[in-house]
Length: 456
Picture (spheres, rainbow, N blue to C red):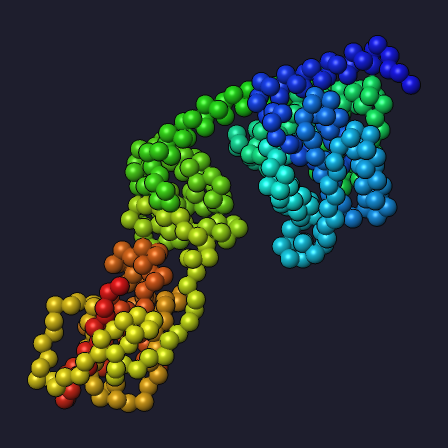
């Protein structure tokens, strides 16, 4: 059955508008394939049909999460039908969402998103594709704005649904849901509807089904106004991003941020630091703590995902791989009568007390009455543990090792890497920093032992 002139006009108008957007935004070109995310719903079917009609080399990708029983299988069959009609290759991937959730602790929504985009990345590499195209439209953009607004997002979150985000492009972002449905009708293309879209179990559905109708009733044109606000913020974000880039060049060098300089120069240091460290996984509360403690040393902050650790030392922040920042809580049994080679190099020598002449080695050498060494004790080398205490040489009471680190202005890295020598669990030497009052050389000493740290 042929199309009416009206249907042809609707189709041509939408094709022209989308093509103009793709060209002006430089989203995709005809020189490489495009992966089109195809669910079988109206948005994705329209996207695939539009891009195909415009002459792009499309490869459809359908994810079957098997979460809705027969509906999931229906969606997959419909995607096959659409691709056969349009003459487009279809890739299908089955996923075990529950297993992924058990492994990662993600929600259903996050698990599906993670699995989906990992696969899309694989397809990009395999097919040499230029981008993944997704079917978000103008109402999706408004919904995302409202959801992120309710989460307290800043300018990045409020403008997060963009025409391009890395390898992901959104050619339909200027079309309304009504535009999409009219295009499908004009092309005589069917689409399926996910039954869960009618449920208010998900926040996005509540915004779509309840909040927006109420907003339009109270303030006609409310959704258009939200979209206008997004456009205004997007223009502001461009200027903002340029300003932050200049701040980044001033205060950051690779993985080091000059915090004290930033705090001294900026009127809103927490805001600037938050933007400079964006993407590292730290929340604003942690950023504020870093700013408040800019003059401190030896502090560390762990990102929410555990992948990054920010170590604060002498007014600078060093960003470290979270896995590398964790030192194994392992104790090495050693024999202080002989040279020690692992885990750190310590030279051991024996002397009569008449030769005792404390050398100018400071904390790099420790001296003990040999009688204490000859007794049957358990000697070990290990790293610092929270709550460790030691009685420093010349003192009567013990002190927290953390306080000794702080007094020496140890950075978090230096504190983490320091080796502590213990005798039957008692800390007797913080190698390279401080001796204890354990087994001192005194009037009754006949022989002594010198332990000398060989710095790396």
